[in-house]
Image 1: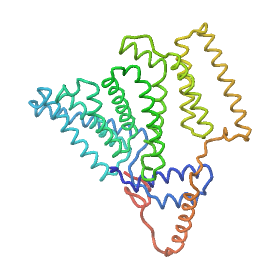
Image 2: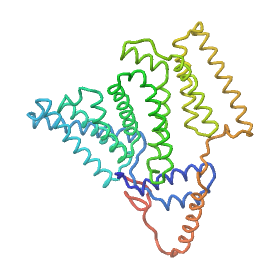
Image 3: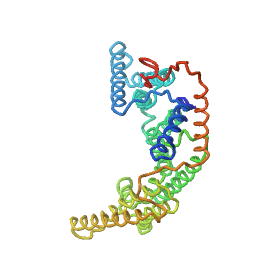
Image 4: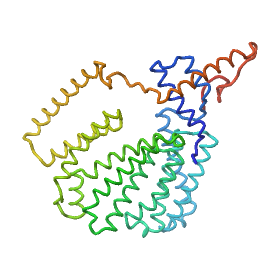
Length: 388
């Protein structure tokens, strides 16, 4: 199902966790090195600057190929149908190139696979729009056509950006469907979207506990956060009022008091649940959305001169931060101000690492003394520990 090597993806997760434990002195250097040796990763993943450069180079190369094609075969791009079919054919070719780079060149987040994936998806949607513009005359049709493509790409290539686009497409599908099938869609729409976001959050939380889905953990965490934000925005007074004015030309919001209470209560509920459950995502979402709630009320209710209000709000935040830091530094609370230490979720994993290190040490001790051990490099000589 996943285009990348699942064995290397799992090894990459283990190495990342081991690196965090090593930085926080939960495991020693010998254990950390044994873990790296036991879980090799042969992906080509350069640093962020090389990744951006490779992505830009790949994008220029694809555009150049498309330009050369139009020079040699101009009769294929003289109308919308020809342009649409051309882009769809190029998208298929880009997916083939993407699979080739992943399987043979071992690219993983190298910039080239990112550029090929995003360009191929862009060509698919643009090709459908040019091939038959009637398919894209209605927003709901666009969402229905794009959703399976984005879902497939998110699952196969474990890409967080595509995962976010797929969630946005699904949310837009639900949003537009309610408006289409219900004459009272404007009234029930906020509550339907709240129910949708709450159900999605509960479903994602359950999926995160599935061992077989551990390779999609980062994507699921992104979906979890987007569900929390969607739930809040579904009942935010500013969002509802502005959509009512823009889409329905009705500035009056029914049950405005309910949405005012919702706007103020949800961030507080997120923060409270985050503190009680020690859920970092809930806590961060609550603090970020609390700012949006303050801005929402500030937009509709004036409390005086803006400069005075901003000064008082800044002073209050500084005072709150000072008191919170002093309390967290005491060390008698369930939370701390110390640097983040990601404790292992299960002691069995750490135990397995220690056992593996023990076996690795025993195997090394049994190796012949005069035998030369080569390996570790793929370019320029054995033992270079580098990929090219």
